[in-house]
Length: 336
Image (tube, rainbow, N blue to C red; front, side):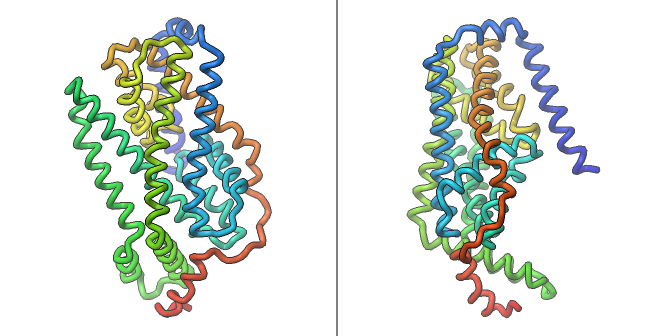
């Protein structure tokens, strides 16, 4: 019953927040802000959205091929886009990540390895997001002290993210997990743990690649700021780049909280509140948030064309690299 009620509750909260925002701003004021737009700048914003999506795929691909060599880039991109589209119909992004792992890993007997690449991609993306949030807060504190309460929260979250990242690639964490497994653990559990341990070892042997992906993740976080800045110019809204550099990372991070579907209502409300600190009217801020949401959906729609990639036929391919590495380890530990 809880599993059935949770998605309905998130949908109810999303609809309630959207209705509250529209009521507070007024449909007429919102329509007036959206009425005049520069088509060329709108096209540029859409192009930046698609480039952002390409960068996301590009920074995940090395993490994927480190675990499962030989996966074609096109196949990985289609699964990524299809899972992104599916995320609009799932209660949390974890469901879309599971679909992506299963779609690419099942025919290769490598669901665990693909899942490891997805987890590390998510952690590095969260780390990059937090770095930009801290940079935004530092810029904000130079002109106003109103956002000071968010600084300890952001630093604490960054430390937690770093701890999770280190634990994911730590030999000690793996050894502790193995030691805590019950003696009666099934063969499947032991095999899964050893394969995940081998996946972590693979990343430990490629620190340069992981560092490059981390840097790309941090740089990629700037794309939403650029997109909203171009949209503001297209809509003729008097919003400075500095205010967007401060507001957008914070609003996006809050929008990732599992409160509503895809952060609907949370992102827009946070953006309205944060831009209000810098004198942006509620109608202008909401118009920008609505335009950004529409463009986000537009970049996810191509994933519908690759829906079959999430449920396609099994692929006859070789074992993943980490699975081969895990087998000797499992034998040494006494796995059946």
